[in-house]
Amino acid sequence: MLPVNATLGVVLAVLLVVAVGVAALARLEDARGHGYARAIALAGVRAAVQLAVVSVLIGWVVRAVPLLLAFLVLMFAVAARTAGRRVTDNRTWWWAAAPLAAGVLPTVLALLLTGLVPLKGVALVPVTGILIGGALTGTVLAGRRALDELRTRHGEVEAGLALGLLPREARLEIARPAASDALLPGLDQTRTVGLVTLPGAFVGMLLGGASPVLAGAVQLFVLVALMTVQAVAVAVTLELVARGMLHRSRTPLGEAEGD
Image 1 (cartoon, rainbow, N blue to C red):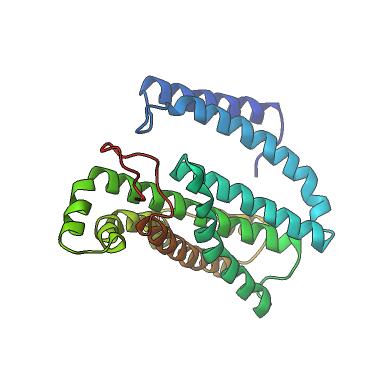
Image 2: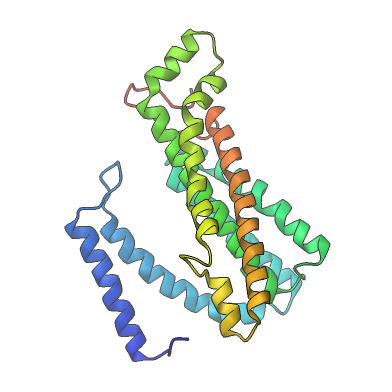
């Protein structure tokens, strides 16, 4: 669809510079004051390097099951660390692996056992990658929104405890609506598919010569599977936050959010 030549490289570089420039001029930053301009630049460069490496390795991975499984484990490990570090900067970040595993593993196993996806890299790697990516997004959004809400409304949590609620129940009352918003991107994508957006799987299959019906069926499968994975990931993340297993180090009141 795109010619791989010098023109493509120049256009990509210009787009990345524009993205970095806009983020810098608008002073886009997170709650801790960390600007996103540098993050965008690094993300663009890392994406180029990582895709180049994967493009070389994927040919070896698809030839042997052990290499395939090792590659999938690597994908999961990177996703777990990325999600965990986005949610918190303390040692509880590794709990982010739980919502990823709870959403992705049963879904992938079901696909393998039913024969819908064969144990071959050419099929398993992209499907698993899409599901891990969806679970990562759901976990990060749910975790960050829930912990931000608990920090902002810490007094309401204390009020719930004073009324006799258990710590888990008090946190759930505050964090549940905020964490549930993590489902909105996936819901909106599914609701508008074919009308506003034409996702990559659908377009890719059409360009590859598949019939529109087959491309639509595959895309529907991807969207429904993603909603399932994200719903599980958000629910598990919310539970971890409510139980204080996934928390941030300090609140404005000087108390650990998980305490």
